[in-house]
Image (tube, rainbow, N blue to C red; front, side, top):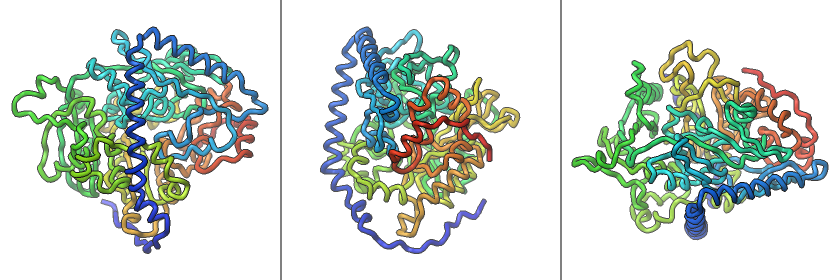
Length: 560
């Protein structure tokens, strides 16, 4: 095993912002949580009202709202107005990346009405939904029908639009791929106001493949049809502890869902791993189960959705002491198992929120909305989190997970770490993210002839040096991480804070199809480029004008 000793760092002097962060729980409890609960309740009422409407009425309202978007786009004067973006407030996006481009001049288009499930088509097995439909809303509608999206992202507030334009993943992605891989049809308003329907095999197939990872910079998505799968009432979940060094844990993780003999019957419906220390982990595999099976004598049912229940990551950690165990969790409660504690970020936001007394008294009001946490933090606390807190996902080939874990330990020393496998399919065109060339000839564990197995390594917490009050340069650590990803054919989802230069951005992602679609569909000079939108820091009026005037050169796709 490689040397995992962390470098010696000097102690850091306390600053005023440290006390603001330390006592931030006061604002969270007395301001953020009550407002969050109220917003959740009002959103729920709106969802119920929408569900009471007929499919025909919802479709009619959708068409009326699309016409408003088209009319608004046509009102824009390219010589006077700024680049097009949505009217959503900057802090509402779920993610750490600052939506700083909205601080400069821009032309707003209001998409706030696009939050309805238009139709659940049981015959075609697709759900037609608008971009602001979130995961909590759609599972509330589909799971009682014994249906679900093929990939259901864990947090309730994650929206369809964000998961398609950005990226989305779940424990079923080792079968179905990323969220965008489950999309059947996209309805998009282009820069000139045209409304087009893009599929993988029609005249707009290039747009269909270019939109994922484009961050909404090719057009305004106004609806999507997404694949549905049949499900059962419960998830039979097996918790299996593992011990060893990080590379041994990585191998145990791969063995948990990708049998070395290639026997497809051994592949579970869901997979998830959590590494708690450099030598301890728990790997969970799930298969759908009927309520008849779950309620058989001797089986354990865990209603994980109750507010007073231990947080899921702490519950899973019990396997390290009690050994392997099996239980049944209601399917919808399993899908959203990380919502209440926001994985383990809740421990940093409210250090005592995992205690039994808090869970019983106020657990029902959790979680705080991420948008409100961002809205109440201010620039000082925001910059503090950028430097001394990590929210990053690394998408790396499965066979490199061990190397990635060792790198993360040396550079950041963050625990727990989340592991979730996903397929990266070999597509007819080269998209922003793509498998390694020739992967199918190596026959590595988890790979098939049509897809390479990757893993999302989720790093969400304060680094070890920060917890020990040592000096730590967060920007430098993220830069090193990004360079490692470029050199190892990995990818960094752009919801996170990025230190990438424009050249390195296009070394990580392939921009050929994206730039082709930017020109073909008139996005240049109307929508800002994906790098510009993802770029760290505030955007000035000068930058906006330069972006508007730019006739972009072909993206730099130089490979390291």
